[in-house]
Length: 132
Image (cartoon, rainbow, N blue to C red; front, side):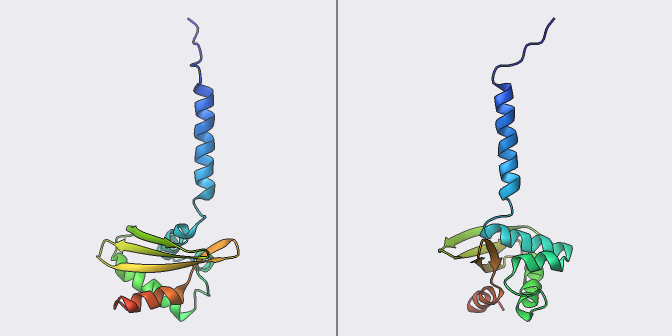
């Protein structure tokens, strides 16, 4: 008995591979990915990775204050949910909800072709919410 190829299976497999490649390539682009990468870097305690997604040095007091607040908001649960995103030309405000009930109003700005967290504006947003 000879096995015959299923028509279109090769095309479907190719399309699936291309789709996965595109998602893998673009998962680290965009303002939401900057917030996600900050969380990942904070979990890993990776200062180099934090430096890639913030607007200033990880040693800066604003970044350190933000990191402390995020750690408290996560309370051992790394999950968060983006509940609102307002886009401007070069700035995006992202409201994230944490399992602890905390809300963080992230401000992400475009720096040439990269999105970076503006630690000062994010902390100002926290202060306006009465959380810091």
